[in-house]
Length: 99
Image 1 (cartoon, rainbow, N blue to C red):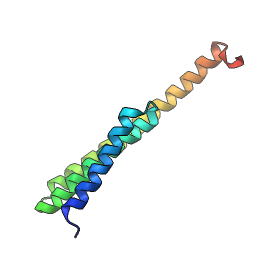
Image 2: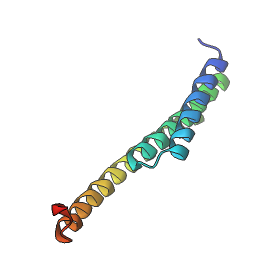
Image 3: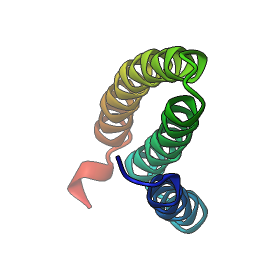
């Protein structure tokens, strides 16, 4: 079994990459992927401390976070596809496609 410091270092690295992605990017897809990285960093922390203390509560909470992230990804993909269709429709109806 690896010491908890390895898990915390991995979690810190994922969290920093996620925060940098949220702060520096303007693309919606990249921001959503960065938020997923942040959630994965939290999950690694929860599971690592749950395993360290021999308690199952952290792992159960991590499963709830994974389910929430999956639902968030489904809603975000649907809203981004609807935005894309709406933007294309506005682009065509305003005569901007000929430019």
